[in-house]
Length: 183
Ligand SMILES: [Zn+2]
Image (tube, rainbow, N blue to C red; front, side, top):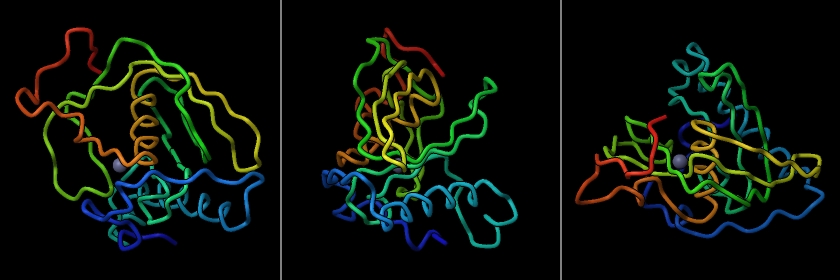
């Protein structure tokens, strides 16, 4: 099982690389990586297991965060606050369309690869449509808004070497954009 020692931290060069496309059909190795990533998220949300292994709780993980520079993400979000759950292992995900309107979390964002709390609003698209492939190589299209849209955008950014704090306005870190909604 993956633990925090498998997760590379801010400053590691892999986090700034553009990850490579995954070949389809997926290799057994790539499938196992995805399953391990999902398992980490589930474990991290289980109080007992998280405490035992010292896991920080997370809802998303991208392969570059475990030092594998390939386009793979896992999202495990049992409740998005509106009664919907998200449980995905995706390869080669792409944002294919998005709203002009932005959204942000009032408390900012965190990341398993960033140990310290970095205050500041991270503006993302309020709505996004994502195209990707699942572990069996089937095409998946997701229409997302609000919190889950933010989570998927954060993870897809990891595949492009982008960290959440790159979006924080240095002069006005806590000022919402005029067209944005708090999520
Ligand atoms: Zn992250």
